[in-house]
Image 1: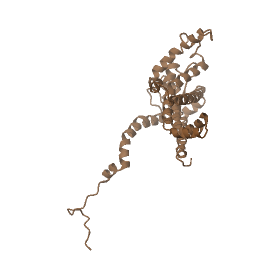
Image 2: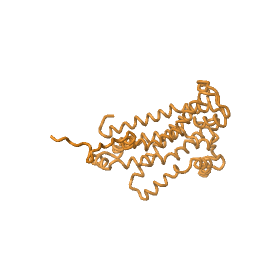
Image 3: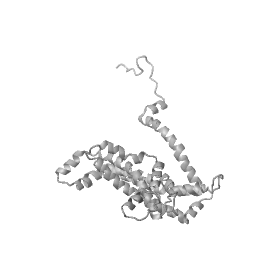
Image 4: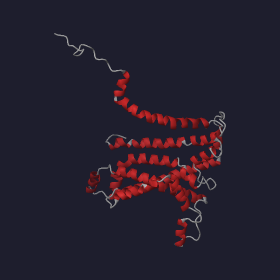
Length: 317
């Protein structure tokens, strides 16, 4: 039997591609190269500041002085600081109430926009305005709306005879908490509504039609068909909503600066106040680091919520 020539037509062996070339031509290698710029960006602008903040939390650093290692003294001091615990309470109250309201109103708005309405595209564009307007401009607008003397809300209520004097929105602790939550809800509803609307449009209409033919009511179709299929989108949207709300800074800082009497101080605003105007970088960094467990809890909620995708595809949870 004649030997088979494996050297090619010219009798020379074909060189094997180098390791670098094989890596670049592979699917994983190409994906890695595409992700490399984003990874470098995150490393420079997120990882380094996070590491520096954690380090400063263990020092007595202040503005103009590098500080020395003091261990957990900053955290021990915060543990006995009533203002810090008040900011934790304010942050949790602010995040929970605002997130629930944004979800409820955003889902209701998404369901309306998913119907066949006239000028539907126009309304979808208008709804995005509170989200695209810069936060500082929104806060300044609400600052005028909540003005103790010239508030449009107080003026309308006085014209209707419901009140006899202007409401002190930002000067009373309870009113101030409600006012900043209302401003955050107004700004955050468009993100929730548009995101859930996108999820609603991915649900096959045939499923709702089949349920209707089986005699299911509108509420049953929503709870048994729409809501379960929308669960992965809800998990993602609400995770981002909680993260945005928990770390909110601009809205609170422009409206109240954390007042009155620290009633609207969130952990983010208190961290800034202690670190920059107060000059205590170590203490401010410790407050910022104390936010990490709450943020990790929100991320874990998103991870476990997304596991329902397996259930959607017929697998086990």
